Image 1: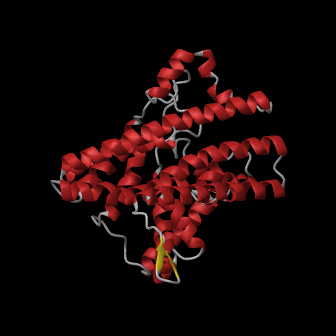
Image 2 (image 1 turned 45 degrees about the vertical axis):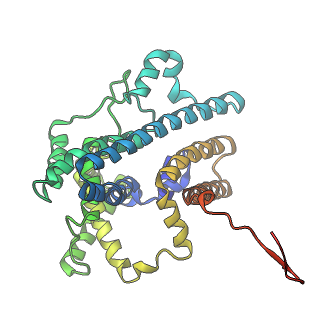
Image 3 (image 1 turned 180 degrees about the vertical axis):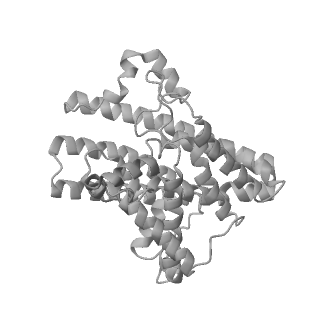
Length: 362
């Protein structure tokens, strides 16, 4: 969530130091994979314990929630951009100009998700992935590995045929994050969460060596100052990381993420049970309220982007803006954590005051 906030904030120089600058994969892989792991508990157990129909019903309810959250996020973004341009004079409304020039077409396209403005495409991708989940669970009735095999086949099909949804009715662009491709990363996390598949054994020399090799290659072809200085690296980079690498989840990105996850999980395994203490407890809280904090991160990123446009991007401004954004995410997670505990539903205990003489005052 913190990396996604940095990456979505226009003009944020901290974006030069996020993990994506030093390897093929980015925070998107981590976000989708962890969503799959979380969905194993949220939906997978229902499919297993309550049956396919109730599991599908819960998925549909979640799709319904995310769709309307996406609509609210669009309206909020349009409002922020309008006020930033009207009252501060910032050029913020450009990406929403079709609402003015082609209002009827734009409104219909927004509602049916055939127009996804920039930085507002992750939730629709998640809706598309969840819509595939009941189908994948049908396959699990035949064999535990069949859903993942079907998911892998669909991912390969995207790279062979290139199907995707329309993402802009005026330019012909497709969805920036293709759900038919990204569902494979989700299903990997989902399968791990349900223990249908397992990670390779930790601290195996051959696996560690292979994973480190992939990360080194990822660094060599992702650290742009190095690539720009070596012509041969530029040609290989174009092959390893094509223009649609993020849209269709290129094999180099997925392999890099899995190797990185293997090394990190192996490294933290001895003390993993202590990671939710101290500062770790704050990060866990943000992850537990992922939908709310993600939406707030997109809103905060737009606000902070306006600050950079208005005040510049000096060291102290950048530091303050990022700390402010992180604080918003933590505050949102804390508030949602409090609300979800439903403190108002707990029985109220009246205090009693006992005074000398055995008089009880309520």
